[in-house]
Length: 336
Ligand code: ACO
Image 1: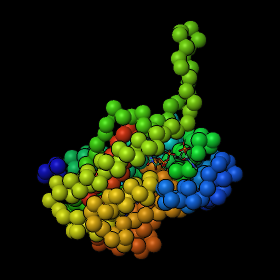
Image 2 (image 1 turned 90 degrees about the vertical axis):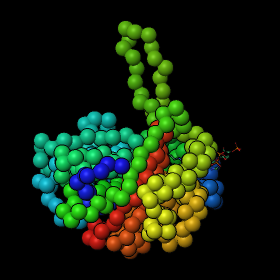
Image 3 (image 1 turned 30 degrees about the vertical axis):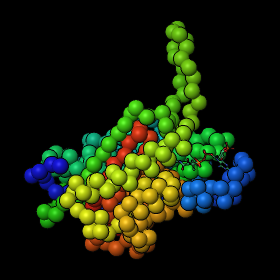
Image 4 (image 1 turned 60 degrees about the horizontal axis):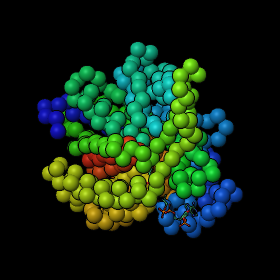
C-alpha cells in the first residue's frame, strides 16, 4: 500500500461489443461439439465476434469515447493512454497510439500497451494509480480490448469455444474530494507456468543463420491445467485480499470477476458467501473477452441497473502469464 498519495477517482466507464453473434449451435458447423457440452462446462451460450475489418482498435475507441463522455472530461484533459490487450490486431503501433489518434487526444501525450492477458485492466489500473498518486499525471484513459477470435485456431474446439471479442474502458483522474476510489489493489504473476496459455508470434530467422522452430500463430491453452490452477488460487487470493484491506466480504456490495468460466466464478462466489444478486456474470452472452471482460461486465451491469452506483465492488481476474490480480473499488454516481 502507498501512503500519503493523491487519491484517484474512477470518473467514467464504457464498453463496446461487436454486433455479430455466434451461438454454440453455430459452432457445430465447424466441429463436433454441442450447446449442451459447452454450456454445462463453461456457462457460455454465445459470443460476439469481430467481422470483416472490424478490430480491437475500433471496439476500443468506441468504449473509450463512452467512458470519456461519462467522465465529463475532454480529450485535451487526458494526459496518458494505457491500453491492455493480449489479442491485438497488430503488435505495433500500440493500440493506445491508434486510439489516441482516432480520438484526437493531444499528440504529445504518452500512449502505450501492456500485456497481462485477462488481468490487463487491473494491471493498467495499478500502473495508473502509481502515476496519479505520485502527481506525475492527472487524468488517464485506460482501454482493455481484444479480438481473440482472429487469433484462435477454429479447428481447436477446446479453446475456440471459450473466447469472444469486446472492449471496456475507464477514465481515472486525480480525486478532488479526497476520496480514493481504489480502496485496495494487488497484481501478481507466475511466469514459471507461462506455457499454460500462449500466443506465439509466427516468424522465421534470417536465412543466413540456423533456422528456428516455426510456430503456428494461434492461442494455445491447456484448459484443464488452467482450470486447476485458477480454482486452487483465485478464491483464496480474493479472500486474503479483502482481509489485507481490513475489510469483511459482507462489507463489499458486488463481485465483478473476469468471465472465463462460470464454475470458476461460482467457486469465488461460494468462498465469499455471496448471493447471486451480488455477482456480475455476462459470460453466457459474451464468453471470455480477455482484458475487456472485467470493464465490460462492470459498465454493462451498471448501465442495466444490476449494479447500483454509490456502492463498492471487488474486481478479480486471471490470465496468461500466468497473471492475476484484484481491486476493491468505489463506484460513484455518474460513472456510466
Ligand atoms: N465439444 C465437445 N467435446 C469437447 C470439446 C468441445 N468443444 N472440447 C473438448 N472436448 C472433449 C475432449 O476431446 C475430451 O474428450 P476425451 O475425454 O474423449 O478425450 C473431453 O471433451 C474432455 O476434455 P477436457 O479438455 O478435459 O474438458 P474439460 O472438462 O477440462 O473442459 C474447458 C474444457 C471448458 C476448456 C475447461 O478446461 C476450462 O474452462 N478451463 C479453463 C480455461 C480458462 O479459464 N481459460 C482462461 C483463459 S484466460 C486468458 O488469459 C486467455
